[in-house]
Figure 1 (cartoon, rainbow, N blue to C red):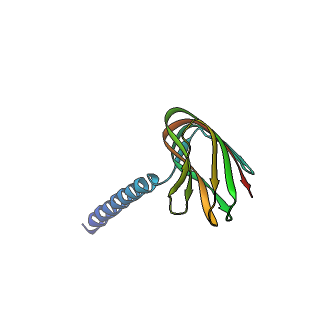
Figure 2: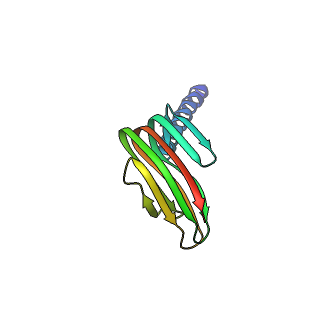
Figure 3: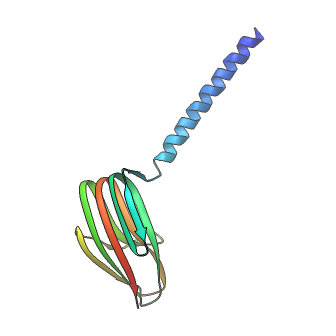
Length: 136
C-alpha cells in the first residue's frame, strides 16, 4: 500500500515539474529574439544580415562625444513582415528613424551620449546592410 502512494506522489511531482518547466520556457522564449536561417557578418563598422525569419531586435552600441556625428548608410530589404532601423538612446527614445528602404541617417550629438543602432523586426524575411562612421 505504501509503495503505491509513493509512486503516485512521484508521478504528481514529475508532472508538476514538467508543467512548470514548460510554462517558464514559454514565457522566456517570448522575450528573446528569434532568428532562423540567418547569415550575418559584423566587421568593424559594417553589419550585414540576411534571414528567413527574424522577430525581435538587435542593437549596436555607439558612444558619441559632444559635437560628434554618427553617419549611417543602410539598405533594408523586406520580403515579408516589418523591418525598422532607428537610432535610440539608452532610454529607448528614438532619435532618428529610417524612412526609406535605402539611405543615410546623420545624428549630431548635442551632448556626450551612448546611443544604439537598433534593428527591429516583426515576422520579417529579408536582409539589412548597415555601415556607420563617427566623425568630429
